[in-house]
Length: 429
Image 1 (tube, rainbow, N blue to C red):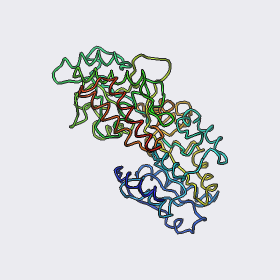
Image 2: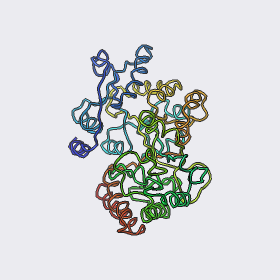
Image 3: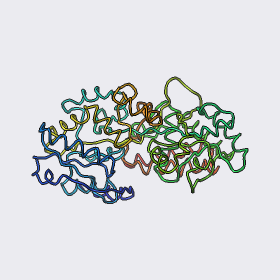
Image 4: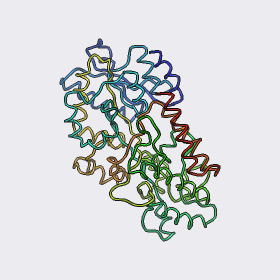
């Protein structure tokens, strides 16, 4: 528990907002007589769990469930770690990303879900065989991914057409050509290449591009950085070219540059769809979605990063079998996957979103969301490492920022980032 207390301090930097809600009657039940579920502090996700928990409790099929949102402290991670220290952790928690799951596993707090009764059938029903490979931790599966938000590239089709381009760019050369044309216009840029300076921004630039360039290869392998290769070098060389030729700005501080036409394209996730629907509906009508760009087009879909989170079952729970029975009931019913999609707009982590007829009506009326759904099976989570924040900060200050300002050649930046990352990982391991 001393180590947990130490990690609480680290996660104080992960800020999330939230609200709370609870089934007071179920919460009042004694330990061992109720399944306690914590859900993400998000209004839409809370709305989903409110419905399914009520139906489960009314069904009488198993032990009642009491759910509440993860307490609103500085971060979900800190709230969970604090509860573990205090001995009042829930049985199940959602809102778990890969890095935090790795920490919880190292602390011996998570149950291997793959040994629970009905797990293989659940994976098969949701066609998750390919998806779940990205969530393997030493041959065990501690996290059940709930949703997967692939990163793809939004392009202003109206601008592409003015430039005489009829299809979305798919390669670095495609981006170079359009950038050269568009940058010839006063104060215009081809692409928004970097979304910010924060550690998590690396998910949306280098890591997304690296997954695409490498065919989905991991950037951390067996506790070592593994992106010092041809794929990593191609990504950094692309970035260097774009910055050196001033085809992107060093920073975009004001309005979204897609809305003003300052850029033709930029990486966006499906969460941007409802945002643009509310604030920039006219711009959204001009948006087309394309894959992550690569050096050369290959066979099949291009891999990308997934902003993805899942749920875990805590090892010390006294009702693990009952809790997993509840989860199996929820996750095995297609109607609840559709309800999740309707309530949250987040693609469920399933491999059959394009084939399962139950989703057809939704995606027929949400064409942009359908394009994201098509990439769920090739969208990968971030590395399963305990020190996600430090590793991605290292990528920023040793690699992305120097290439951006032209102070390091791509090859040197890559080598420096890998060396510093390995030193960091060696210290932890």
